[in-house]
Amino acid sequence: MRKQYWFIILTYIIMQFSALIAIPLLFKFGYAGGQPTDENMLHAQGLWSVISFIACLVVVLLILRTVPKETLRNGQKDSIGLSILWAIAGFFIALFSQGIAGSIEYYVFGIGRESENTQAILDVIQAVPLMIIVSSVIGPILEEIIFRKIIFGALYEKTNFFFAGLISSVIFGIVHADLKHLLLYTAMGFTFAFLYARTKRIWVPIFAHLMMNTFVVIMQLEPVRNYLEQQSTQMQLIIGGLFL
Image 1 (tube, rainbow, N blue to C red):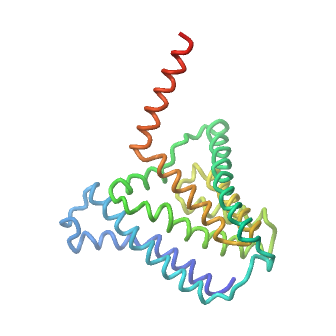
Image 2: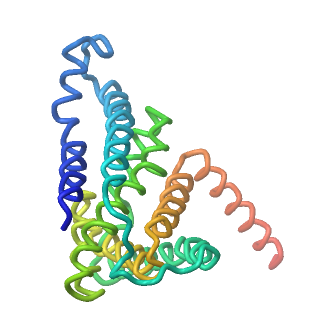
Image 3: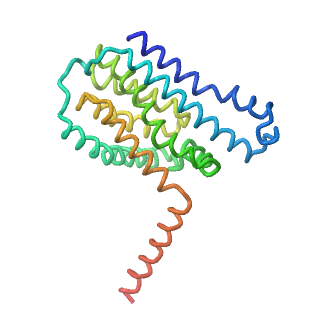
């Protein structure tokens, strides 16, 4: 693995753990009056997430500029048009694989569909709406660079797709700190790895990942959920009326 990639991984790790030091310092220096209440903690987490993710992305992109241009296994990239089609299809494939994995977790292992990681992110978004940019855009870009371009790419060069996809996807799931849904994250990781291996363009899984995260976050927001519940109730009343 290129040394630049190790620097990128190190930058990502530092960013992930930076809140352990940064948030207490924010309160120590007077943020929110120095009062670490639950509400203030959510605001601090959101604020620091926005700052740290943006800083991490800038550093990662600057480091990537020093890496010589190369394709996965020196293969031929798909055309731009075909890659766009795969990026769009990848969104639906990711949702499908997520649905299958979620059903296996629920019906085979008895694991609830609720995700602690997703709920924690939604709580922060409610406190700091700008956090949507992190969860829907910056996060997917960084994750695809780390887990697909670097980890999957390095393993794929030495092994095969299944092994590289499995290891990189399991690590991808562990990092999300929601181990009961490890199968779900692994399935998603395999989907994005397939898109990268198929097209040889990292922006393809980035785009699919970005669309999926945005869709999931929007669907979980309270106003959207309330609207969908209302529409569902009205539809049930209409259907019920047809059989009266």
